[in-house]
Image (cartoon, rainbow, N blue to C red; front, side, top):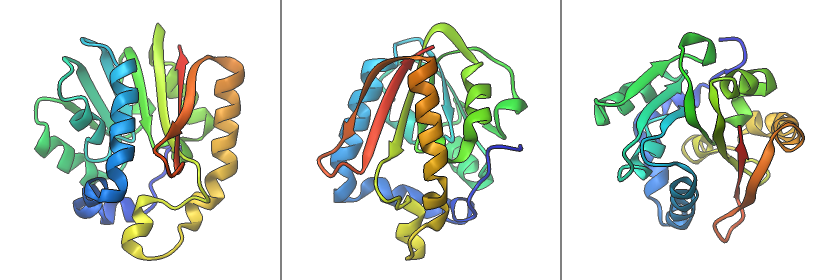
Length: 195
């Protein structure tokens, strides 16, 4: 797993991570993320969720009839996701650890971790005519893990150039369908591209 590295708090904080999604501050952002996913994830899509964590995207897409595969390198996150959604497929690993072709590839907050080479390996799993949907932080990076450890997440700050490199690649190499801000605070942005 050379490109997709886990920042240690994610595995340590797996059991309390979802609390972040339940806060009043996140409810508007959650609705906006759901709106984006509902527009671009079709019924019966084969969906690959990169950096799936505890299965947040699957929770949002509960009304869709999709074939879902979540992949993450945080063992505890995968354990929680599998416990919640035993009928879904979860893989502990990265793009090199499984085969498959997908209609929609999701990256909810995971692009800072995968690197450009990792992104390309995931995109190669998308079918022609499919979609890539990414939601990412667009602030002086405060990461959900920071809420629990109580300090600024320097790891995220150091990843900012990598995020910009990935966004530049997506904008120059793929057809961007839509980009925008999520929530009124402007902490998150999204990009949707044709594959």
